[in-house]
Amino acid sequence: MKAQRQARIDHEIQRILGTLITQELSDPRLSFVTVTRAEVTDDLQHCKVYVSVIGDRHAARQSLDALEHAAGFLRGELGHKIDLRHTPALTFIEDRSAEKAIALAKTLREAEERHRAAETQHSATEVAE
Image (cartoon, rainbow, N blue to C red):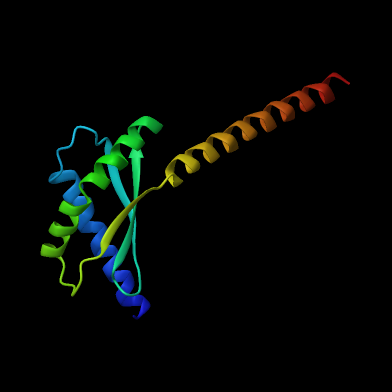
């Protein structure tokens, strides 16, 4: 399958599932879930759905359990909303890239603060001499 068509299918699946999860699912185990990416295989039989969950590890695990429980429903609804010969089986995977980006930004901010403090201390030492 051409890469451009597959990218369009990935994006459409991501968009539809994002809408379905936020508007159609009412499972109390679901936290704030965002579909960050969908990757369908070349044969369109399977789709990895990457989701970002706001909350701690426990909330993330519960949300993933709820999504796995609702996978059949979501696949059926996806089949009604997208025009494909076969609706792919859905596998949900936690996407922790947002957490990693926040941690990296925090580390960079702390390094910058240490650098400024060292620079200030060095300037004060030069003035004293």
